[in-house]
Image 1 (cartoon, rainbow, N blue to C red):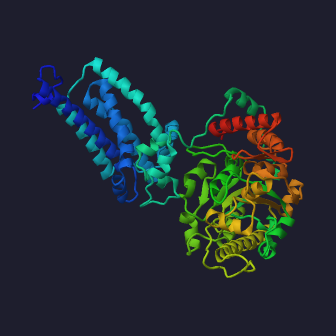
Image 2 (cartoon, rainbow, N blue to C red; image 1 turned 45 degrees about the horizontal axis):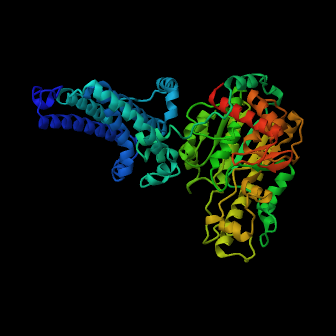
Image 3 (cartoon, rainbow, N blue to C red; image 1 turned 45 degrees about the vertical axis):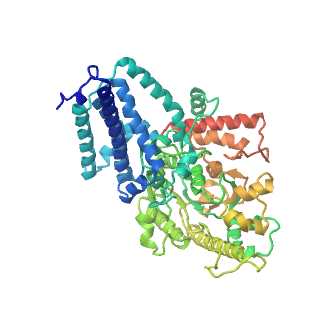
Length: 615
């Protein structure tokens, strides 16, 4: 059969018609092999998620083209380079199916896809796979994929054997490489990725993992080349930055000062009574308890980078000290790791789903080895969905007790609530309590009453929690802060009706838009251990510097990162990613020479410390 003219290595002896058929056969079958290899990568793209996802890919021509196109192009490029169809196919199958298979297993075991940045951590991934006892036994899908590759290679080896001359192949190869440059823009385009290839039929759009796999594998993998990674700032010098960081002497927390730290990030919690000229609302009923807690605490304005969403930005800025956030794909320096290095037990809770913002994996990368979610704790404690604060905060205290009565280590607990999450009902007031006097529209009235009912209840639960810690003999410091201002109607309709200034070009509007409150509270044992009363009004501080403020109140120096960023914090107490800063007590967009130098130093430190793991 191999002697048949169509299956020969050369078309040199063939007539014009047969020669054309010969090359159509070779190029056509090789192209089909590339298409099949692309389809095979899609077949593995969704891991253990429902098979209906495969159908959703097939119904979207653009999604198919963006996944299959690069694979088919790779096969043809390798053919132009090697001149052997079977070698081109097999050489393309190794990376394409290898990465697809890695993605398949990673989704199964960690619910986390393979991204381009993960290639830097292949050695670490291998070590984890060896120690984690993952079951890598091939299943039917894996055997099917392996069979397709073997069959395709054999088919090409025996039946597709045309070898173009080198003087033809080389120009085609170079032309193909040159064509890849403009085409790469398609894969970096955020509008195409976020809107034109949206595929929400069978996934939750709030899960970054599910959004990724809803687009296949090859396409989102290539898109991840240009997204989600931290970039070195202009003028960055690794040597100078390393020397600056090494000039600080890391300081351990003195044994006598290792107080327990309980942190609570409250979902959409903000003090609306601070708005100017908003009438018709009984603010005192809603915030009376919280204001009494502020009176016995050290409090101030927390300036965030977000509004009405993006919870994870504030929580990870607090945990890391980084103003800029990116896709964390490996162990990254953070305060979680620092507290662990100081002998603290480190854990926390969030009653929502572990896949939300990929917390299941990222929290581990940020030094929180034990974390409790809906799936592994709160679904058993609350049957009404995602646990409310009257369930979460008592559980935070119960976990504290388990550590206190168990190993008794100093304790760092990082917790994120869910109760205040919008949107809020516009049709009825489900808590039954009203704070408005009837002057506003029904929709705005219900939004306000529902939100303030949640705020008031959260303050009551917080008071209960602080009362428990008040009675403790162990020294305890509690850090409370809101992550962002809440959603208040589509297009901010309720804010507009209330007359709240959200014009960020003005100082009032900027703070109304981006600020929440922080509260640092200490029991008597902690006040005695640290020599600080923890009362009064503190400075405005950005979310990336809140931990610096806490260390200052505790009298701790911290590691080199903390000390270096504390020096910057003293110059720029508010440093945001929206281009606004506080310098010399004034909100500004334009920094003086000292401010510019501090910002440049911070950006360099952030990049270096975020990419050079030390723990």
